[in-house]
Image 1: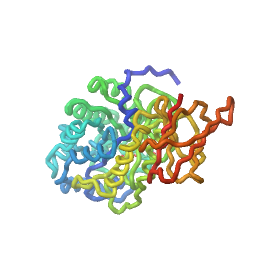
Image 2 (image 1 turned 135 degrees about the vertical axis):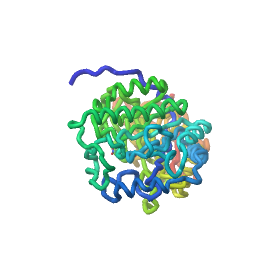
Image 3 (image 1 turned 120 degrees about the vertical axis):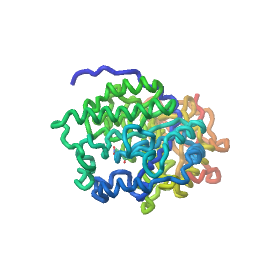
Image 4 (image 1 turned 90 degrees about the vertical axis):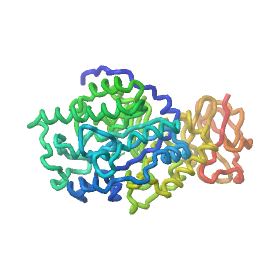
Length: 429
Ligand code: JFZ
């Protein structure tokens, strides 16, 4: 392998690594049918014609991105990411390069502009999701996907499907794709984060990745980008920093990546990215909090996803869980925002530890046996131990050994426990 030159210095990720929690939203034609975003085409569950016809019914009457932003704030999220265009190719912004958009169909308007304005007005960071593949575009090849190949009934008319035989068509697609990114990144003010998706359908060089990143940084010097433009990194724990991404993406419950870059775990609340009312397999608020704290304890950020209905509403099952997370963060945010890995093993009961400078936070999710919490391998002296949310002082005993056998034992009376996660704050010195 030849050494690759790092194209352009990346954006400042400090807001992202400090923020630790984001809210992702998937909304599009699929929301009308109440199905997963785009993928039912590959699964043969819907034909291209049926899918495209949903554009005649997609018109979110109660679209209120200010309410989304308010909910994101209430949840304690620091940034929001919204689908400008999923793999299906339907744009929610005013693209001049295609008729397949919310502007030119029933909705008759740009849904991204009010989103960007509302999120910015709420003081949150603005993220745009953009699918590199566009399964609607005639010059985009039909290629195998991680879920198989799209059956022919899911192909739009005359769709291109041989990149080697018709290289000019691929070049035309790249011009189109870059044109849409230019529309998004020059027409909507400052954008904080670009969430690429679907890079795995082509190679980094086929996407003309280095050149594209250089161009994007010219349009938006401060933007940060995930690594989905680089198919070789996708889903793989890696230590390589090829200079094409500001942070590494980690999906759902996969292990945390080993990387020197910041990373983010994207997580659904049920098992669907988009609005799918038959999917009632909701994770509890406790589970979601465990994912949040667990990500921070491993040095990462959590992006929780919801699928608003085709009307633009976020269902109560999602909103109520987000509010629990937010209420917990208002009591315990010091153990999440600005925190990272404590570099210590989880407690005997697998509870994660987070750290911010000289403050160490022990997260106690369950009821510890005999009210005792044990932390091993801590070799710094504890000066003070309290319940973070209430300031109640706790009793502790500590042994510091030179090589191994260091432990800290704390007593956490049952009456002090939080119903979700009791955070013990330790001041070290
Ligand atoms: C992708 C999309 O295909 C999906 O529809 C959704 O938008 C999600 C946020 O991103 O799906 C993926 C991508 C990568 C993995 C899993 C689902 N992965 O690495 O396991």
